[in-house]
Image 1 (spheres, rainbow, N blue to C red):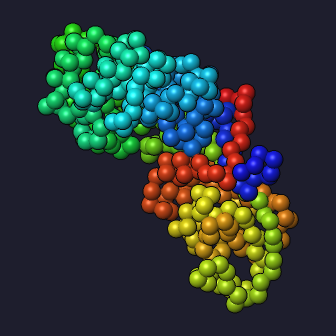
Image 2 (image 1 turned 90 degrees about the vertical axis):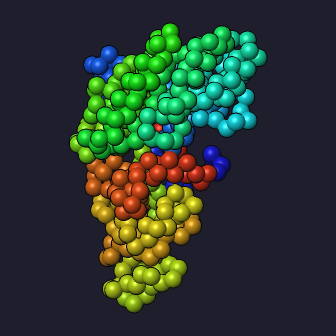
Image 3 (image 1 turned 90 degrees about the horizontal axis):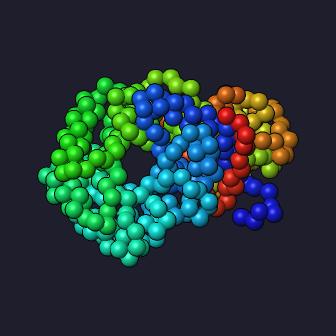
Length: 376
């Protein structure tokens, strides 16, 4: 989309909200003696990794987490100098550029460790490595039966500095779930193996939910992700401020008679004479088609239902006898402080999680705009 043209739709990112949220999370961690790693993978959960990273560091993060080494290198190119950690790459990725840029890497197998060590030799410097133990999520991470071999290889590898032992929780967003304590026990066992091998690694396990609910699992470093963006992963109330708003505008209004139908398939028929407002945003812009018939927007100071199916490029809003002006703001979701829909509401309606909603907002036709530069 040309920067010279007005946006069809935009996501507005409140950096003040991100600073507030990260500050709250970092304060929780600090009370436990832990540092904070702000997770900015997937382009900052759709919020823009570089801008979010800068705001997070300003608010107290001493580490930043990126999924891939490519994401980490993008942050370095954007001028981010904080400690960076990346943990998931394909087997054909060369780790040497990340090592040269002082990016910490994760190893979950002896083979991955060997690739990192080879890259370190070519980069001419030691690689900083976090060994990942699978404690029960059964995704990435070394299985317990292979853990002693991985630890001993890492301890003996001159091109590698073992910085940390880490893992990831499966059910931390369900406080009291028995798997949390079981994973903590397995993590302690894995750490003991590393210590017995002569290593003195940092420990990190806590995601957003555990940062909020399990101070005993903060250890040396916590890794908040979704909570930094103001979306609460746990049932209890927290002072988190959603940072993303999706907005568009009215491009056309028209009256239709009772009995007229709207959009593809004529799934919606007017029960009375009404005014429709056309909004130039659709499923190509991140509005799920499956919200058709189940969503409303904030327009003219109130919620109004979307009439008919969400299309690729547009949707229609039932405004009754009101006639909003062309150019009027339409909020599809936001923090909810005015009564507008929220990302969580979309997620609940669709039977998914709000992570999926906000990460889905990185679209070519949706402009990103930042506010709250100096706010906390």
